[in-house]
Image 1 (cartoon, helix red, strand yellow):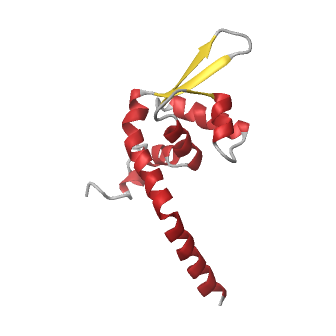
Image 2: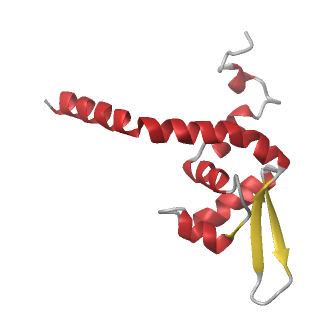
Length: 124
């Protein structure tokens, strides 16, 4: 069965779960969406991604770079100038990421209403 999610646990050579965990975390999705159309400096990303700590942004960017989704360019100037951009692999994933972010934005009020109904039912 090609769409059996349980195969991700049973195949020792399959890293699907790890990859999905990485690209589906909230910071990775936001960073990739921001880098869709332009290169950004670390400080720009830090100011733009609301709620992310400097440490968490650093970890996220390193993981995305390690996975080949983001490239990091260091310019030999003082103070150091570092820019991040999507790689070809990252751009190929970004269509899906953008669709997920767009879906979330357009359905956030529906989700909020469902949560409120659920919480009210559980509490009552």
